[in-house]
Image (cartoon, rainbow over all chains, first blue to last red; front, side, top):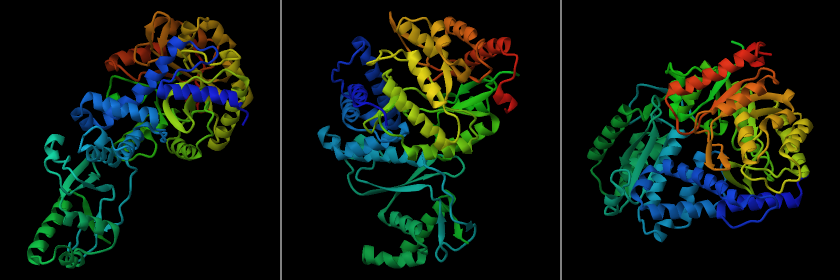
Amino acid sequence: MSLLQETKDIQSKLALFCRTGESIDLPGLTPSRLHHYRRLVYNIIQDNLESSFPIVYEYIEREKWQGMVYDFFCRHNCKSYQIWQIAGEFCEYAIKEDFATRYQIEYLNDLLKFEWEEMLVYNMENISPDNYIDTGDPLNNVMILNPEHKLLQLQYPVHLHSPITAIEKKGNYFVLLYREQGTGKVQFIDLSLWYALVIEQIGSQEIVLKDLLKEAPNLFGTINMEHLTETTSAFVKELRTRKFILGFKK
Amino acid sequence: MNTMIGLGYRRDFAGEFLEGTSIKPDFVEFAPENWMNIGGYWKKQINQIAEKYPILCHGLSLSIGSPDPLDFDFLKKLKTFLIEYKVKIYSEHLSFAKCDNAHLYDLLPVPFREDAAKHVVQKIKQVQDYLERPFVLENVSYYTPVAAQMTEGEFINTIVKESGCQLLLDINNVYVNGFNHKYDPYSFIEELPLDRVAYIHMAGHEQVEPDLIIDTHGEAIIDPVYDLFEWAIKKIKPVPVLLERDFNIPEMKELNDELNRLRSITNKTWSKKNELVTGN
């Protein structure tokens, strides 16, 4: 390429100034106007993150939030050419930099993850489900799931409670996020470990519920199989009603 | 109808394009980066928009003026999008929004220098070859020159002439730059390769300091910009004209009044049909 190193350096300095605010001296520059570029770039990033993480933004003290955004803005090289995807980069960055500890916000990683994954499922490209028929036996036929979904594991139940209440309920939580086929809305369902496992297994291999149930004692030890079969069947029925289980393999 | 007056697609008033009766654009402009590789609700919406209106695209992330090489993964997806929506025109800004492998999501000014012009020319040629369509380049607003060794007019002329690309003439940007850098916008437009203009943008702006205007797309177009537009289009063949409104969205009637004012000016001046209307 014909670009001289000198010109390249000028552009690098300008770009770096926009992110760090480190003063630069370039020929012909109007220094009093330079800050507008920095302000405009920062506002774009900040506005995008605020709208991507409305709950985080609502619950975190303004100073802490601004500190996180500013840190990300100055130090992270945004990779995505689609601005809405920087929310995912912010989420990863916050976890890598351990903002949860630095800013003493225990639930932060979970809440960022939950809000980002919700947006990701909402925007994800359409995925056609495998061919299916409407009728079948949930225990003995392979079930076809709505493929536009994501399973999340969380430490804090930020999907059920306000972040403040969630802190007191640390544990193991599983959430199913899926995009409704008709409306495109994202729904979530709180899951037990067993139900998360059922969805994960049905979604990843051609396994029938009856065979999955046989594995339950390995997981739970002694268990009332009749009761488990009954409750799992009811759960599957509920997922059918909510159109997450679309039907049965053809 | 001889002219095409369009409006940029925004989530803020997306419903109006399909169900509303208060805005009546002749075409819709997408920023492809906002709608590429998505599904669900918005995919359905933009599919319906594309069934109802001709689509033009104006990109944000190509970063044609960047020192960094082109992102061919992006171009591949962009090409698919442009084909899928039968996009009539794809345009981008003469600026850079990515540097040292980091996106900034705003339009930074490229130094007006011979080597930078040649660099942009090479990249435009690559884009045109890859996308297999003409590339349309927009003159951008800038708030400070950066290490310039030639004028903005010379810079644009060199690039358009050597790359063979077309020009998106942003009238508001010319006005903003004329004000900010104290030059005559009329003379500036006369300097440009007007036979290469394929598309026009019109927008509002905000004066933030006594001697500085920022190109916000957040206000109505002001009269001096309409005057400049009316004067300029006499020198240009009929092309699509877009109203840009990205922030501070007014009542739909106000937007439609702006569309109608642009339509009335163009109808008065352009008797010949727009090539996009005739399909040529």
